[in-house]
Length: 636
Image (cartoon, one colour):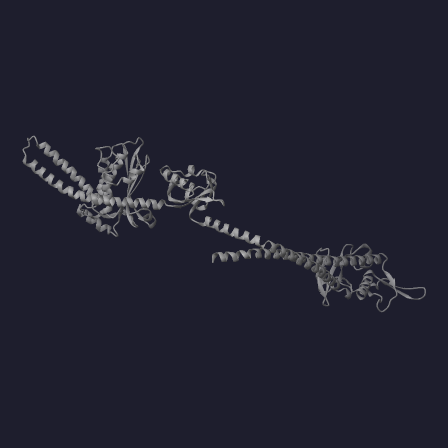
């Protein structure tokens, strides 16, 4: 189903390309058509404006010519009667030699009559107007009134498209100013040179012009339609012939895109290296695993960049296997950018070309560090449980034998004469038996089989009571620092106080011994606090559990431990000290006591960096501090 779906999807790819080109081709012609339409319409408007300006200039020239001659005399008739606005002039009316009367016509009168004739014969409208007309015929209409106000504000020309009697017109108005030749008439009216008299509006009929424009655009549209259709035919031919090629290319791109997305999104770390071990490709998962960026890894040798000495045999087996063309699976370790060793569940395999020749090696890895740590912790825990069971059985049987030895040796010592030569031997036997009995008690503590008497105990107070004794255990060159909570934050646990004392003393003794070979300033810190262990902590520390705990932490800056010593430090009789300087039961006893009280012990140490031992002791659920303190006082 997935292949069928991909095939159908790939068939749509050439069609999508074709539709995209068709849309683009159509959009181009649509834009060209809009551009030509508005450009042509703009040219029509500019032509109409030019006609209006020409008409205005022609009428202005006529008006100036008439004004320069003081007006013209014509035979009065019904259409051109003597103008009453020139009645003050003595020569308004003249009589010719043959007795005919002539009347003076001023420039505005002449132009107005020219406009009336032009409108009757050509449909071209013109009008001399003013906001303060003397002649009612010069009264402006609504548009002219707005235009005159614009001219009064200094606008040199007003142009607009309006309708007159339902027909489209382009109207243009320009200002009329008082000129020197106009003073013959307008000077009497109080006008001065340069003063705005009004304006002349010219209205160009647009009906025929727009009709011509539409016809012209239909012709252009026809040409565009032919070119657009020809382009569609070419597009169809091109995509029909290349459909198979596009389909194959689309399938390949889809396949590559899926692989690329898989490598980008997967949490698995993927690496491709050359036959000489040069890194050629890493995915983001690999960058996240080792902390290096792709730029830092590409071109480097994988052996030099990630080699871990303890995994040389596994790495050698890996490369030998893939070089033979076989698949390899196992656990290897790499060194991250910050120097931490990462354990990885790795799969290695060769990559072949079309001829079956190995061209590259690939590694797919998953972070196995946490699981590796938990696995080791589980093995260690199981081993400790087994050793504890064995130690418990041996200690019980051995203790029974020691009881007989110690009892009879004590009886013999009491019965024998003080000056007997064998008395000293019996004393040595008894003391050796006591030391052996002490060892069995430590074994029982490790195996959690010793008899205890738990009670509510304030750790804060217990540690304070032991401070003097702890100082006496150390030499003068060792600084001992206590970090304890306030008195109001006392930490209460259910424990046999003697067990806590054993744990603290053994911790300090071990820290003291670790400082013997150190030449720097020696220091031990005992820190008591209250912590809460969450699910994340529990997931990485086998044997722990979530909840609120008292944390006893002892930190020294001594010689530290090797990885081997850290793994075995809690085992009975394991010691790094010389013969006769220790039994190897100190930390194992601590381990047993903590486990017997349902706690958790954790150790971290590095050579020459010191050691930190953390003991998590479960707190009492709820304690009435006042009542408990009083009961504690009574016990004392």
